[in-house]
Length: 112
Image 1 (tube, rainbow, N blue to C red):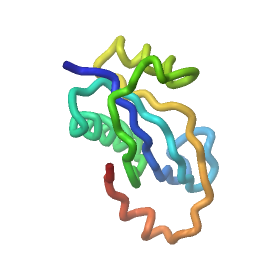
Image 2: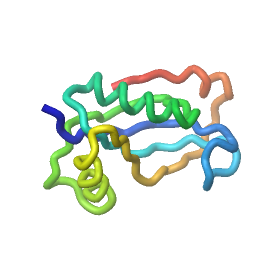
Image 3: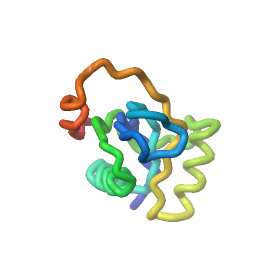
């Protein structure tokens, strides 16, 4: 049975791939979707972000969401996700400075 899953995604967005960001951007974002397993959650998130051309660097802290523990933006997103099993919804992007090289960013990977 599918339930709402929540995870934290570390993403690299190249300049020009997303309105609201100037230059290459590294960010963390909470992502919710309906899934019946960790593998399904990861597959759906990867497909969504790949569709935008965004590079996932890490997927972490993935777990079924406990609705009572969610508030604000995440609670609103969870309600929306439950209406459509195809939805992959993300919250506010929290950008951070990156001191590494571009080759480090391009490696990427998917961790739990």
